[in-house]
Image (tube, rainbow, N blue to C red):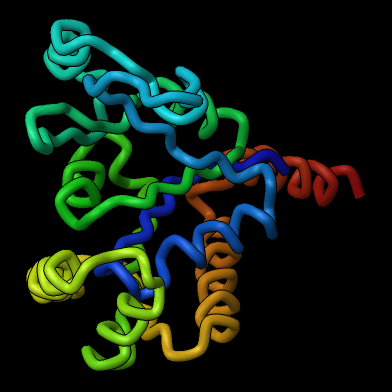
Amino acid sequence: MQRRGLLLILSSPSGAGKSTLARRLMDWDPTIRFSVSATTRPPRPGEVDGQHYYFRDRAAFETMIDEGEMLEHAEVFGNFYGSPRAPVEAAMREGRDTLFDIDWQGGQQIRNSALGRDVVSVFVLPPSIAELDRRLRGRAQDSDEVIAGRMAKSRDEISHWAEYDYVLVNDDLDISFNSLLTILEAERMRRDRQPALSDFVRGLNREFEQR
């Protein structure tokens, strides 16, 4: 039976494992749509409109905000970023889920939007702050100054854990991924996400009457 797609929000402090879990989830189910953000920043070499971002000028982006076409948005370092509503609604009608890899502020805006009842939000915590620091340094991508900034931001991000439907402590990646699958599969089966159930049950009742 056709179901309505849901909006799966994954949030975490940098280094907790959110992006790895998101990639695994999309490998597990290729029908899951990853939310492509819109932005006012210019495209970088190799970036494709509609694949990496929806590139819009500032006037067009502000019009989308004014007309309610953005599920969430924020201004970062002078550029707007946000999640367009139309592709998400199209995926929902097709029974496809949309995955959002966003922070708590974006998640809060989506939960408060017209599509909020179809949101499932998951916050990923590190097993310890020491382990979070170790993972960030293990990437060997950032300077000590950048890592210190990420750690400072992590404290604020972690303070919003209670705003989420589910919380995973990512001590073991395989266990956390299996827990995420359990959450997704259960939420997909919710009665209110299966609009065809009413017709199905009416059909069962007709069978009773015909006996």
